[in-house]
Image (tube, rainbow, N blue to C red):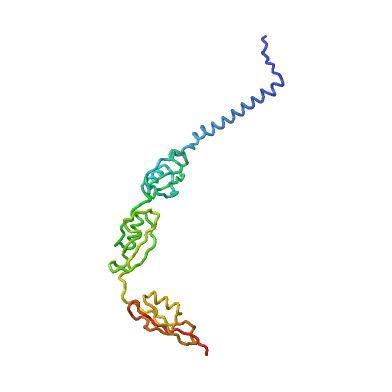
Length: 258
């Protein structure tokens, strides 16, 4: 009868080296198995990667075309910002995030930076356009409307643009605002006299100046029934037509002590 082979392992070596080494190898094997199952086997079984897509490249594309390309890939878009760019045309994509080639989940929003076109541009000729048409034309060229100033003009009809500032044809940064001078028709030769009776002297002065008239002689009359500085009478009847810059004389109340 054959005798078995006996391996004599010292008791101390078994507990110090062999058993711990065996345990470590088992732990590494278990962790490796979990990683392989989680990263390789399970995605293939349950189809996890079906919801992962590659981000397409839309740099330089027009915004609507870029949005359509993302939509076909199962992605959404949002505009992060707009910037001036001398190389990329207006409304075209300067950059995107996440960048092309990255793997993302379907339905992810891709942030885009769009071009506002060249910063330097020529102010379009808006003279002889209506105020509304001029606003549209400036916006179309990327300019922001500044102040609209109404001016008298014997050559332009009411609501027609007389000029712009800076002037049409000027090359400026589109960050600058463009003011418009809009006609309010020919300068009138006559003005309507406002009703000043009962007004304070300060209010009457303002109304006279706004009407294109000037204050003439001011007399003061004792009238205890009225507050001091109240207009008692005026030299021209309210509603009457007088020449521009005509003088309007006033009588103002005072209270004199006896």
